[in-house]
Length: 211
Image (cartoon, rainbow, N blue to C red; front, top):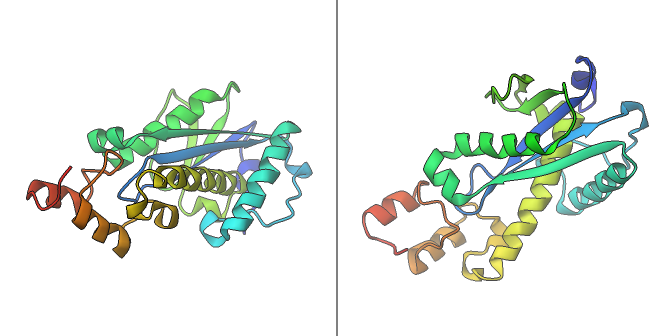
């Protein structure tokens, strides 16, 4: 069950972090961080849970709700991303950590604790942190972060789709669907494709596709 139990186990403010876009063949990885200031005043019209369990319509409705809470100073959220170039240079895990550190840097709050969806650590600036496997199914802060990041990244890939429509990014968000891979084989790759990801890496190495 997604609730504030994990957050309430800490003393002081808790920042929930999650990312979207570790698996796609194209586009940046996007992270989001959420702090809720008053757990008792959060009464969502829609269950806040893992973004993958929600429809696109539900996710957008929740982002509107979170935006309203932010205006009412009941929560705060920021986004951070790592570019395709950074993903290729650093690897996807290190790029994900970089995007999360960029989120943390946007918060002015001091002495916060961080909870991260996953099984890795940031070890950033001596901040108290805890990694939580399947955290987006347990913590509202992490779930909210996953929803916001998902909606933002989907919108971003839809914008990119306007220039590179043949790859179907509006529908596949950069993931390796058959349509996407067929388009890569036929047309090559763009500057938004991850050259360190398979099958792109091998296709480029063997000069099967062009860049």
